[in-house]
Length: 90
Image 1 (cartoon, one colour):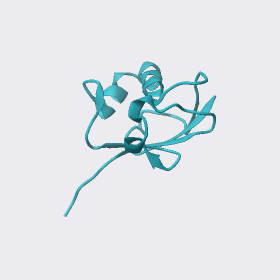
Image 2 (cartoon, one colour):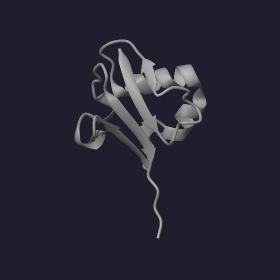
Image 3 (tube, one colour):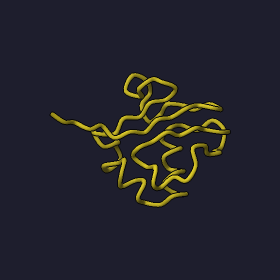
Image 4 (cartoon, helix red, strand yellow):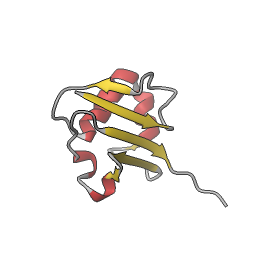
């Protein structure tokens, strides 16, 4: 199935805005796929141990995964996923 990825966090590592992955995967499986395909730098940027870093925001189809099943969120064909790094300033 096709997944669209928008990211400011991984844009120098992921070379395409769309990737094809197996059907019926979770967000966690998608990240495992990205790590396998693009290398450990993906893991280093978004994970701290087995959890997302506190400054990483993941949005699936306009909704934060914080209000769904988090990394166990199931993905469907043509989902749009945003992976962004939160920035604070003053």
